Image (cartoon, rainbow, N blue to C red):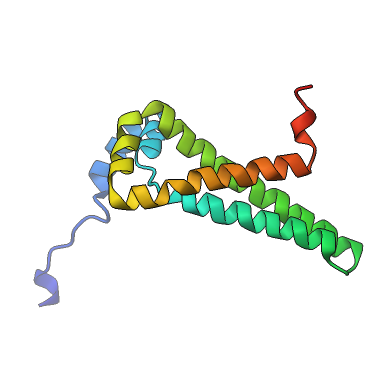
Length: 137
């Protein structure tokens, strides 16, 4: 019976190629941002918290200097990833406020939205520790 089964194209190969060729990169970015779930805020909060943990460990760690420097690098990388995720969701707030309102009205989105504020507080704390609060003066 192996010969009688039909073979479906892999992931709609023929139609998918045409679909992606006609979409502009800016439209793809807008679609990506529109589909961004609220749960990425929790991810950003966790990543920023991890960066602060590495930063604190670098201050109090009794180890060789290169280990402290590695902890600082991990802190900086996690900070940049967390800020990038928050910037993507901030773009969704600006470009698609009706979708964000739908997220706020759902129970899951309502539970995850406070992570935005907490992640922003962690970023503000990280910036204050590193002296970036005085850049505007």
